[in-house]
Image (cartoon, rainbow, N blue to C red; front, side, top):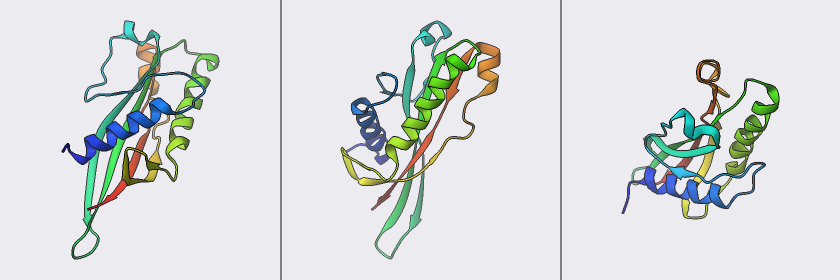
Length: 142
């Protein structure tokens, strides 16, 4: 038995791999999605277990909100034609999980999606890398 955050991150990775998006990618679950700039000529999508918040739901049940971050990274030119498709992909990833239960972890139900900031301007300006990290929260009762 793995930690619930890892089980959910693995389920998210599997769902993304089987999903249909405007761009193709192979998601990978990682703890450190740090890539060399040279490796980012291709799109990288990383699934990272990010946090867990637990509250008492009843005398015998607790509620866990598990946060999973999905990193979208690629080296790009600083123009709309290069960035617009990545922003669309980030939105598609957020939409993909809305009101969804995970196939490989049925106890987890989508709770919310946060994409804040939409991208990291400093990374784009200083290194020419588009970076966006949607955070998807799933609720589990235990």
